[in-house]
Image 1: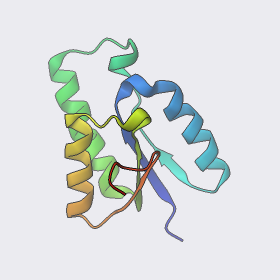
Image 2: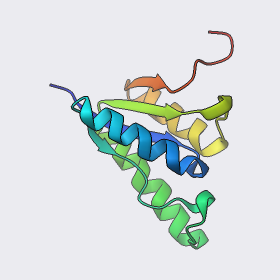
Image 3: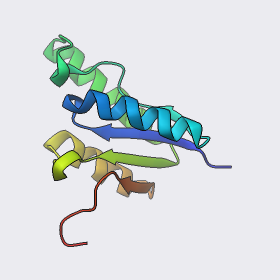
Length: 102
């Protein structure tokens, strides 16, 4: 069964990450997600951000599904890059909120 899910989105949505993690874990998914939330107050250096961004792409690599946390329709540049990366790998992509135009 394909059941590894990577959560992606702005790290300012820390509470949404935690809520979705709980919900999807109860649905049987193995969840991979950021371990730090820079936009929610965790302090990281530019070098650490670059390393964490690369690590997150590896989390997408090992995932079957990518869940985009796009609260209020917000998708920042890092998340756009992650979506494009997931699409290039033919990963299943789920959005928290419907995209405009859908």
